[in-house]
Length: 170
Image (tube, rainbow, N blue to C red):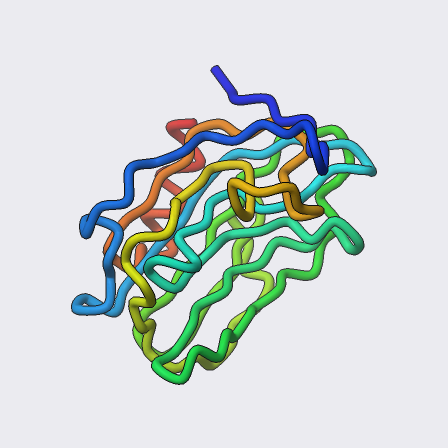
């Protein structure tokens, strides 16, 4: 099964996730966000965000179609790591963003697309809404347009073999 999002600015869909410290990875300094996504040429947006509360998000850029992972440091400065493949082609894609405490990796369909240096994740207000398919609960251009399935968030940096295993089971 998958969740369908229309990406509307004023009339939009999202899943509200309870804000809980189980999404706080500031002690572990490890994070993996994985999902299967499908969208057409006009698709993209925020796949998962705990940005305002715990300092990270997963996204498909609506202009380029590139997958990204963003983390915030203690100075409230975000570092975003982008993949290099436009995945807005109407096919299912397995996307993964990994943070290991000092770097981020972006994978598409099991292939690493980019590695970026990043500062440690810093939890922010620890109370803002956490959402699937939306950048916020307010009208915004960042709402996701497309399908999301098999979303998983780990407080660990998965290995390449664990990512491949996930591809085979999905």
